[in-house]
Image (cartoon, rainbow, N blue to C red; front, side):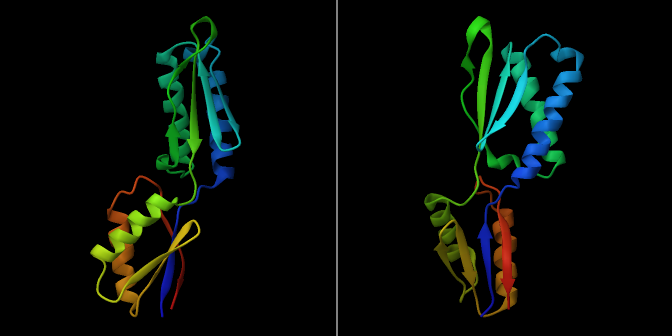
Length: 162
């Protein structure tokens, strides 16, 4: 019986590379000079700091450009509120979300049951969803439908087996 797994993964090495590139660009750009702008990665969080909210928006834009260039989906980032710091500085954290939580897994399962051809079933296994069917063509139709729908998280399809 053919199966595949729906997962949501983020390559942390690519995120680290993107943060390093963004930090280097911020250090060399004239518009960030003397603003105290910085980007740091620690334990699944990206901490952004700058002098003003305008510079914070520019800092987020630089980070997002570097992430997109390194093929990291922006859906994996969840931005926190912009917080006021000392001397008018602002801070913001972006959390990196990996894995499919229970709520999203139920949403994916419900979507598969509603939109998939007859004979396709899905089940949650930890932080992934396994989809199985009798025909390979049915699974390919499910993959196409899942790609078209926006679940708010990046989805990848792995372990396709006949």
